Image 1 (tube, helix red, strand yellow):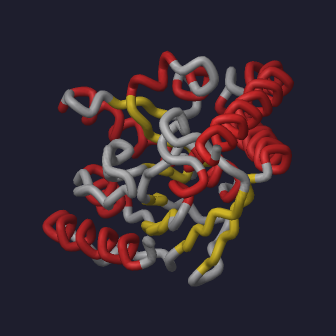
Image 2 (spheres, rainbow, N blue to C red; image 1 turned 180 degrees about the vertical axis):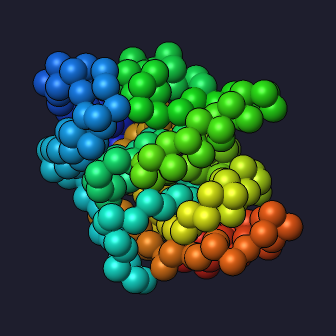
Length: 241
């Protein structure tokens, strides 16, 4: 019975995702054509995500270790357990920000418009693709666009999920561009909707997100990338249930 109700809720949630995406699509199309409108595009992504959250009964509770500067460019690194993670950052983000995600999202009926424009896709199995993706991300950071990335590279196959090993790219990029790095622990969203919800369904509830204070990378060198990666891993893992 519980699983049936969770599948009913998932269907309800998907309806609102599709409904509001269709409603916002003309605005997405116009604002994704030119970089100067990316802040407006992200405002619509925030509004879209908030409405989906409201009508589905899935809410996000953010706890900040330190207040973030909305004028500062950051690299956000978070664990990844659910498709809701994108909504979490769309609601949390301000101004110009963009995601880096797997190249399969180029074929996603909803997310493809973003990964063909504002966001960056990467083939995890191709070093050339990774090089091009992080080169583009570096250029965007120099333009003042914050980067949101999930350094595990994928959603873990285990249930309950375990924090997987991090990729090196975002930590080298943060040091190379002298960009503060913000670790984010998405604590329990997997209990509400794990992965895409197809296996265990979803349910209304509150998801907790812990935003750690930014790590200054200005004094770090390339050789410190592994130390930085380990530090961020420990911080994120320390808040997970």
